[in-house]
Structures are given as C-alpha cells and as structure tokens.
Image (cartoon, rainbow, N blue to C red; front, side):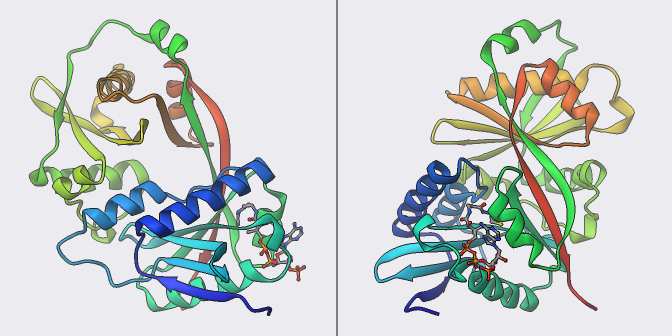
Amino acid sequence: MENFRFKALKGMDKDLYKALSMLEDICKKHDDVRLKLELDYKLAKKDAPDKSPEENKDEFTCWDGDKLVGYLGIDDFGGRTIEVNGMVHPEYRRRGIFKELYSLVKKEWEKRSSDSMLLLTDSKSSAGKSFIKTTDSLYDHTEYEMILSDSLFEKAKGASKGLMLREACNDDALEIARQNSIYFGEELSDQKLLNIEVEKKRGFHVYMALLEGIIVGKVHLHLINGEGGIFGLGIIPEYRGKGLGRELLLLSVEKLKEFHANHIYLQVDAENDTALGLYQSCGFKENYSMEYYKLKKER
Ligand SMILES: CC(C)(COP(=O)(O)OP(=O)(O)OC[C@H]1O[C@@H](n2cnc3c(N)ncnc32)[C@H](O)[C@@H]1OP(=O)(O)O)[C@@H](O)C(=O)NCCC(=O)NCCS
C-alpha cells in the first residue's frame, strides 16, 4: 500500500469532526448517496461522557499527509451488535483503503463482546454494495429515512385521545429497556440501561407516553443543529389499535417544533408496514433507504 497512515482513535474531537464533515460532504456530492456516521452524536458524547468512559477505539481513519482520505466508524450502543459505516475520498478509491479500514475494524470487533456487526450502505451506492459483497456478510434489512412535510402534517392533526408526554428520568431506564425489548426484539439482558440525564446532555430526550397517568409507550427525540429526529417510538401491545401511536407521533413532532427543529426525520424498517403507514399518514415521506448487512462471529 502507498504511503497512507492508518490511525484508530478513541473518540470524536472537534478537529476530527470538522475533517469528517468535509469528507462526508465531498462524498455526498460526488456519489449522491447518504451515510449514517452519527458525527454530531459522537461529538456530543465526547462532551458528555458516561461515568466510565469507554476505552474502545471507534474511529478508524486513513490519512495522506494531513489530509483525511478514508474513514470507517463504529457505533456501539452497548448491545450485541455494532454498526459500521464509512467512506473514501473519491480521488483515493480502488487503492485498497476501505479494505484496510475494514480489516482494522474487524480486528477491533473480535476483541469486543458484541457477536454481530452490521455493515451499512445507501441502497443507491453501487460501490458500497460491491465492497460489501467482498465480505462474508449477509443482507439483513433495509431502513427508510422519512422526512416530515409540514403541509401534510397540518392536515394529519386530529382529535386528542388524552395522551400526555412526561420527560423520562433515570428511574424510567428499566421500563424503557423493557419496551425496547418488546418493540425491537433486543433481549432485556443484552441492553445497557440508558443514563437519561447523560443522554439529555447529548441532545437525546426520552419521553414516556401516559394515558390517565399510566405509561402506555415512549419515544426518543433527538435535536442537534436544528435537525429533529424521532426514534424508538412505541406503544405497549395492550394499548395498540386505539390511535395512541398516531397521537404519540403527532405529539413528538409538536415537541420537536417547540424545540425549533427545522427538519424532522425518522427511520423505519422497510418491512414494517404498520409503522410505515402510520408515518405516511402523519405527513412523513421517504427520503432514502439504507441497507444493513450482517456478519456473525464464528463460535
Ligand atoms: C464504498 C467505498 C467506501 C469503497 O472505498 P475504496 O477505498 O475505493 O474500496 P477498496 O479500494 O478498499 O475496495 C475493496 C474492494 O471492494 C470492491 N469495490 C470497491 N469499490 C468498487 C466499485 N466502485 N465497483 C466495484 N467493486 C468495488 C472491489 O472488490 C475492491 O477490490 P478491487 O479494487 O481489488 O477489485 C467508496 O466507494 C465510497 O466512499 N463510496 C461512497 C460512500 C459509501 O457508499 N459508503 C458505504 C460503504 S459500505
């Protein structure tokens, strides 16, 4: 390999954030594809660390002198799966840079307790898909990112069923994990309980949904740089089919508008027809789709 320098870093700092944002812009313009690098969240995480900062190296970079030319980042949510996503500067492609970054990330993953790794690529990225074919990963699922259309949202508003939002506190962490296990199939024992106060400092606000004082669901709202994200939304099965999911979504949008979000987006599994239908009926439109490919550790 030419004189490239590969460096694994522990966390995101402002300089790396700036260099990565520039590289992301170059790649987005060149390829017209989306990446899911979570740079803002990673930077916020550095400013608001957990009590026990992770020692793991999550940022894998490649440099030509002082120029950042390649990146592969790990998102480790503390569960059984890590997610990885990255890019190479258009002028530096097909020289084996991504292959080298991937082999470094794979070695790092081998050391961790997570037993699967998800490789992400925009469905439109033929290079991304071709690269993924060279790995042993298998197609897992596709997620759509959906963006709110304000005019459609105004039309979607309806009569209230009396659902209320209450900002979550650390005492809700177990209930949040219990609901995640129902909605997203993550075993309760595999989840790291959220530190709600720390998450808030990172721009993540969790709300419990209450009906007549009883918790019936929850949602995670993310606000950073005027972008509002809706995640982890769910209604407990006993309370479904009564329009509460729809009201929770509408309340979430209103809350993000109160926080002055300019754009509101969410992500949804492309095969989750119920959620897709709900989001469309509330004014969300598909923006792009991200494919996930899974690699499992050999036992
Ligand atoms: C996907 C991407 C990261 C590849 O970076 P790269 O440094 O050019 O990749 P490498 O040189 O390490 O390629 C390794 C192998 O992947 C495959 N590959 C990579 N790009 C390819 C392309 N455009 N067409 C066909 N195969 C390709 C080849 O098998 C290649 O080996 P070879 O060159 O010996 O044939 C780069 O094209 C990119 O940044 N794309 C935009 C962002 C993106 O889609 N990210 C998703 C990553 S999964």
